[in-house]
Length: 479
Image 1 (spheres, rainbow, N blue to C red):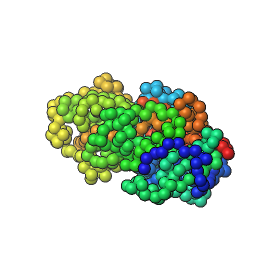
Image 2 (cartoon, rainbow, N blue to C red):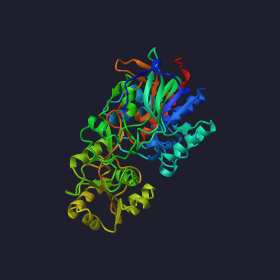
Image 3 (cartoon, rainbow, N blue to C red):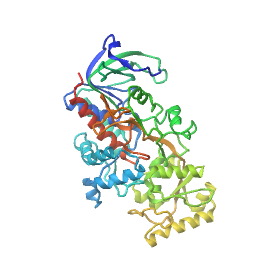
């Protein structure tokens, strides 16, 4: 099913359905937009090309970042929107659109609270720090899954008698005669494995269309066109339907693309499992925070393990082969995470001695012994003089067997680039003008994260801008 050229309303023989707001996508951003649009008095149709809600959102770990929260205060963590703003710009190499970052950080706290008080989402009683954040400000949804949030959003939709329209794939946007996006051509009864199946219907949107279709991490042709390194052999954490058709439709409609070549790889991924998998719970929550990453050829560290994702992924790629994430039993215990599933799958392996671990991964034993000795000195000296890794609370020398290891190799995880929006979530064209009637939120957009997204900021982005898009689309008539 190829995208057609722009379609104008005067070519439409009849409208099969009419509503106020059409939302394309049923992940965090799309469902937030739908809920807010409904609350603002609009009728809403949510289109989802697959057979179930959630997209990539539902397979995420449910981590959301926000500054100045009650949970931070409980644990004595001083944070602010300004601090988070600086962290995001630093990670993004200052290629972020500053005003979009400002909107995200200024609304993050209230949106986190909204997810608790309004949606009823439960979070674990802990605050984590991930690479690139200057303080712990990351909260994990109960069950360590994005499905925890999605389920609460669906429950709220059900309260309003709103249903997600499954197997409904956006095929094209429709312009009115006065150059306003006024509807969508939809492939009804869409089959991902057989895209030509089904029939096209025309859905009119009296107030606006909201794009919330996610990123293009599984679209090998499109991502390879942006970054030639990302060939078929580079795995992805995304579901296979994370593709670029809606971005291309928006560009066909005049939307400005922004930073499409900035594609984030997840450095916590393992080549020993497909997709996102279970290993990241060990690598990101335990190794990066309390352990070390070792080049198995040299037996040495080569990076600050709490660097941002781009730095870690680029370093791993420069090594040219999988490296080993290592932690001891004390790190596992201090982290508070259960890694039984990782071990059962043999993505994470357990060793009674360091020598046994070194032998399995073919690491020079004397070198890894020296490396750990040097790292452990950091706790006596109060600083990691080799790579500047922060020594976070509960971190300790790596000396307590058994030891745990995981092979690490980056996978395509998140696409920072997308279509350009303004602070009202309105889509912008190449001349910097608003495309009336068209809004976007979440990973389909670009500019919020610049060159690299900080961990847990994606859900914040989706919820903040999804809510903004829903409110604005419902309140602005384009009749």
